Length: 66
Image (cartoon, rainbow, N blue to C red; front, side, top):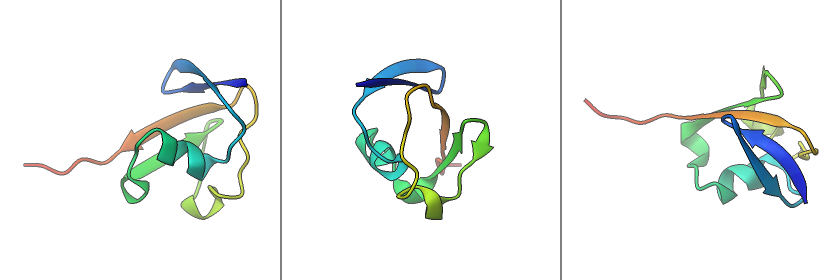
């Protein structure tokens, strides 16, 4: 297990890539933006970006309404 920070909270996770993390957290892939270690990570890099111990994520989901 490794520890990462997601939106300010420390979480323990198993080895996975960014796309797997987004899915595991229940976010809709097409309605989320992600900052990975203080850099916006394009969606086309999510599957090839392996998460490492100590990584920091800020995840923002888009919600429609009016």
